[in-house]
Amino acid sequence: MMKALFRRVLYIFVLLYQRSSGRIGGKVQGLPVLLLTTTGRKTGKKRITPLGYLEYDGHYVVTASNAGFDTQPGWFHNLTSNPQVRVQIRDKQFAAIAERAEPTLRQRLWATFMERAPGYGAYQKRTAREIPIVLLRPVSPS
Image (cartoon, rainbow, N blue to C red; front, side, top):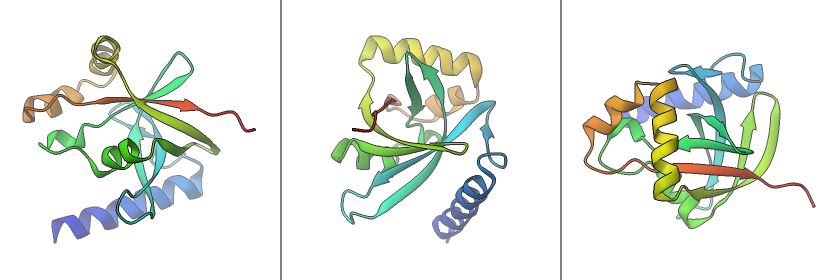
């Protein structure tokens, strides 16, 4: 029941973000929000997830915190299966390639997340897993 309610709320959040070009739902924990579209690894369906992000060296950076649950979020499994994703930031949409940050870079980026959105620290305390950091590299159209 809670899962169905969460999905309904998420659906409404995404719809409001899309319709308002990010004016509604454009921030979470002090971070700007992007919409990440992955392809379901089992279903092949498009899945849209709102995520707080940072910018780093021409990439958009998100964290697979999953609110501190002990499992990786579904979108993370999807992009490890197919790293070609779509990103929407406000009214701008583009293709990107997702890649997991290597350990040294992950540590630096995690520190930046902690500075800008300290609430993510609570997620790390709730779980034994290391929360992955994902870089989204925009792909220029060919």
